[in-house]
Image (cartoon, rainbow, N blue to C red; front, top):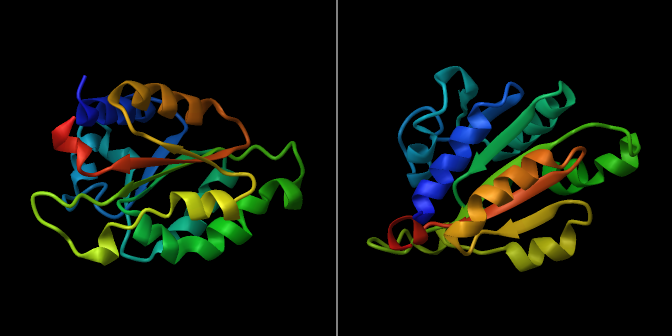
Length: 177
């Protein structure tokens, strides 16, 4: 299947789970290419937020405390940077602050912005994967290079109890692969 189709299949599968919720910008209303991958997810699972990335990352953590598995969508790595306080100082340190038995599964979905057909400028195409792999000690980062690894990667992230996984997509692959 194509890259986009695998993403949509993955979001549809996650949307069928009783304990999942999707939050971020352009999850309920159009605005990014990621929006279209959520078209089969029930509306009551989509939680639209304003552009307030640190708040979003904090809400993601709070929702996980309530037993939900949040799929927190930041369309580009550049936007994740605005939520770094929550990501680095809280989500990545959960194990140390709350012990091994604390059940908090989080999926963070982000991407490297597409450059075609229109270049969105450099504040939207950053790839901070390698730098964050150095900073984050407990959060796993999976880069989705190929279509055939997408669905299994999202299933894996969902199955990881007491773990946060960041899945990195390539915007240019939505129409290319």
